[in-house]
Length: 119
Image (cartoon, rainbow, N blue to C red):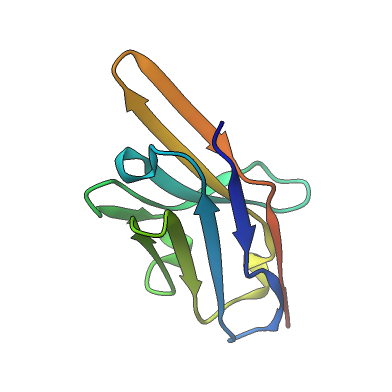
């Protein structure tokens, strides 16, 4: 059973930075697509950024140029560097791990970490 443990959330002023980390247990990290999602109160969960096993990345338009996703396969960890934070970035941020191995599919979520950006 894979466990994802997020850290790095907190309260920051607008314009500030935070770095989220997500450490994964298990043996499928290197073949997984890792993603960061967020959910603000009253809103649906949305994909913020994702990185494939090859290192290809994609971002939602609202964070392009401000956020950067990266991974360290040796540490089974994915990161989300968030710069120039805005109040609208306030949300609970969730780490997601998705993989396929043979005929089996895997999809795991972390517990979430709160990011609050004050104006």
